[in-house]
Image (tube, rainbow, N blue to C red; front, top):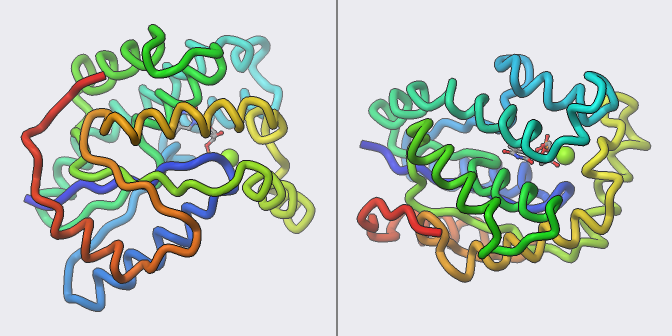
Length: 221
Ligand code: TMP
Ligand code: MG
């Protein structure tokens, strides 16, 4: 059975770059690794609807915090069997965003912290009701929110297809999301977390993650 790893962080944190470096490190060690990014754009109708809503389509969908969270959660519900299948055939499945994204952004939109209703709603909806596999390790890529925002803005000017969405344009949402992520990591929400900065040594992190003893599947708030 492979290990399930997750990279989390605010928009523009640099998750994609870190994911590529981790995959190279593991592959150099001869491990079989697959990467899945959430939302699964182009593969999940729920993911596509969510992206369209954040670009202003589908009426007041984006205005509903819970409707948006349900779309993201349904994408993962549809992916749960595929993730289990990938875990049975690989050493590592690396996810770029996962359930904690929904916990962090949903709580942040509602101006709640870890102990508000949103985080527990997501935990029970996704891990219990939808049976989303619980990660072995979650990594928070913690970069200053201002830097992440600059990167999201730079992406927009470089590539017309990457117009910033409603969440990326909302600096105060990104700041609150970063705070909730910090609390999720501090409390090892759902599984052990590692908090890393952009200058983390990817080879060491890759080794540390792979050698992390598997905790009893733990689903706590
Ligand atoms: P993306 O920027 O990774 O494409 O994701 C789109 C936005 O949706 C991003 O601001 C994070 C947010 N999001 C959630 O709120 N819940 C989720 O479950 C996921 C995967 C993303
Ligand atoms: Mg984004």
